[in-house]
Length: 203
Image (cartoon, rainbow, N blue to C red; front, side, top):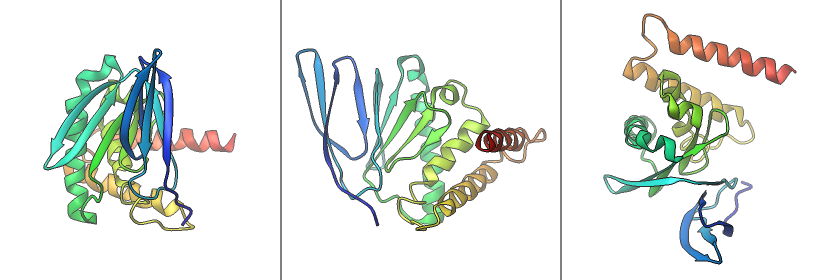
């Protein structure tokens, strides 16, 4: 299935934190540098590494460990992000089965939109700074990828993973009522986003 396990060492300046797929085994500091040692807990199909000046906050959700890695200016959003994630997680576990991993990481990134490595989601600073309905939808979409493809891989038709994640995100959005607002702002934003993406791909 083109999956692999790994042991990796990432060395950065000592002001930087590193978030990686897998489990943090240990961290060493010397000569103004930090080395982070990560190891895969299960075989994975790709490797994600994020490095930045992060503020880290830890939570416990019924035995599941959750960590947020946010830029200092957005640390106040940590509780809100974890609350959104927890509600989405509970909804999906009822629909798609138990979340199979022991922990989860919420990671801020300068990359646009969202991204979903195994056991985490990355969300852009722009969305974290202004958590509107589209931001909630994006979180719901990325969390759905913990099932599609990380549990259920529709190889080789990867577009099905996106289709099911999108379906799941709309199901959750319907459940909490943000797609039924009178101004249909979520649907409008999503439609405009699709147009922009299509135009980018065509160019």
